[in-house]
Image (cartoon, rainbow, N blue to C red; front, side, top):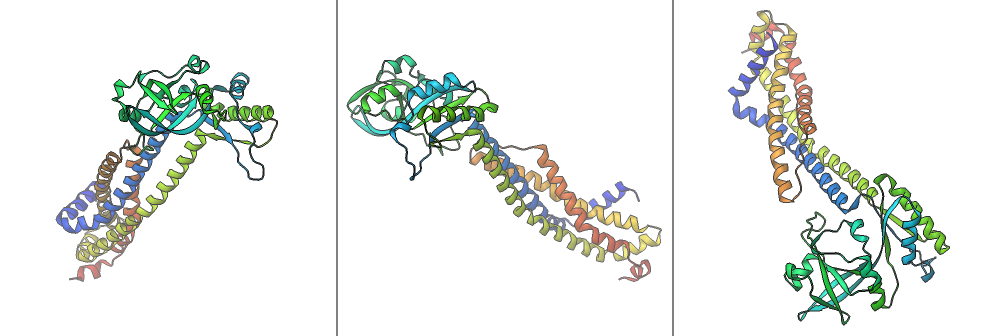
Amino acid sequence: MNFFESVIIAWESVIANKLRSLLTMLGIIIGVSSVITVSALGQSGRAAINKEMDAFGANRFSIYYRYDSDDPITDADGFTLQDVVTIKEISPAVENMAPISWDSANIRSKGKEIGVEIVATTADYTEIANLKLDAGRFFSNEDDDAKRYVAVISESLAKELFSSSAAIGKKIMVSNRPFKVIGVLAREESIFSMGMDSKLMYIPISTYFSFSGSNWINNIEGKAVSQTEVDKAIEHSLNILHRRHRNENKYNAWNSQKEIDSVNQVTGIVTLVISAIAGISLLVGGIGIMNIMLVSVTERTREIGIRKALGARETDIMIQFLIEALVLSFSGGILGMFLGFGLSQIIAMFIKIPAVISWQMIALAFAFSAVVGVCFGLYPARKAAYQDPIEALRYE
């Protein structure tokens, strides 16, 4: 008996017992679909996060204060605008630098009063943070130097105060000072925003210093010339700051690339653990295949005896039953694969992330099916192959 004849006989056996075969395959279907769904969602989540981080700025870094109760930050340690200029001029690894001062305030316009987050910075921040505008423009270095009362607001704030398209040129009162809206940021859908858009207001930092009475800078954000130069840019920035302020270990740095690497590592581990848990159902499916193959061997004992009496070798009998186990396993694997792909597409669409389906997942599904079929079909196949033909012929 050749291989193709064995496959045909195995398939005929599956078709002849449709319900039993489907119930036998159920564990494989659930196991493969679970593993593929989890793997697909893990890859989709990782791709979505990486995309968000790239949009956030893969070359981006931030310098902030290292707070220590035993060695507190003093005014002499505070960042200055000259620090930013010096770092940009000296370090060849730094492309852009911008100071950031955060504040919160209640703003008024057309009788409405709304609490907002104020971000005071310079024109270079648009390049660092990849800010996109829906209307108008971002403030320039000239606006900053002249301490002009101009503002760029987020889309949600523009909608709440005005209609977005009509916001340009309107006045917003901040601490009884009128700011002219010159730009509206574009709304960017993000998996981190959870559908929320922060009410932000960007203003020139020199303007903020003039009306707030404070020159405090919360942190400095920068952009390296390339992804490979981020660590060097951070090292240069920290060294320059420590030399200029004559201190040590007063500042820390945050690196977006390290965040991406950490996220990828965590999502990889979580996906692997959940996939392993989901894969337990494959073990249950394998036991089901072994059980039904043992029943099949018992039911077909006389058939085995006749085949041996007609000259079938033990190898032929073993291959026949092993192929039957593989047919069950592969059939369950194919159904589980399509079910897993469908579930991953539906879940990805529901949580608004792109579904990632790779050839590796297809190979994984077939590999799982083959391993389960061989491992759990081998014992019943051996039991069938080594039966005594005389005893098998006597079996009723």
